[in-house]
Length: 223
Ligand SMILES: Nc1nc2c(ncn2[C@@H]2O[C@H](COP(=O)(O)OP(=O)(O)O)[C@@H](O)[C@H]2O)c(=O)[nH]1
Ligand SMILES: [Mg+2]
Ligand SMILES: [Zn+2]
Image 1: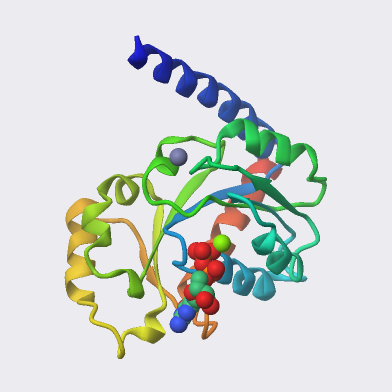
Image 2: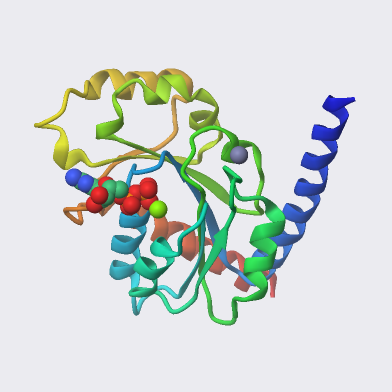
């Protein structure tokens, strides 16, 4: 009985996610769902990313958090459309929450929709939000075993980020082991090593720009 209830919840979620995806794709918007542990640097990465894209790529953001609007305030410095979703005790965003956030966004001219999920490496992976891709984030300060311990995120992500590389000289983190664990789980996934703090984002910004351009071209061809 319990199993069928859970299945129904996920089925409804997937239906709403499908509607979100249809709307976003129809508008030619590239959407990623950023998933990582609390404190891995999701908001700092997005602050740096939005700062670098400002004036070049028009973005909107939906940010999930249990209670505060602190992340939304940080991101609002760099983006004029930021919607905060407070999930209360909920440990992930669901498609309906994103749908409601989308109703508060004017997507005209928007090319990039960023979703910062609630800090959690586990259940956000299972909830489709209507994104084009999931981006998985780990950081040097979390320990080098976290990819191996969270294989589901590694397998579901279209790209993986390793943040806080500026801390590599100071904390025990076996970079070769981490890379090997990722390769073992998903041989061809791009693994981009960044430091949001130092604005060291080269491969990541290239990846975002490529996705935005490809999505925009695809939408133009369909018209
Ligand atoms: N050293 C270092 N600290 C970082 C980096 N990115 C984020 N932080 C710090 O890590 C903490 C958590 O960052 P935050 O962006 O709030 O993480 P979130 O919970 O994943 O959104 C903050 O104190 C940030 O200043 C980084 O690249 N290097
Ligand atoms: Mg955050
Ligand atoms: Zn959850």
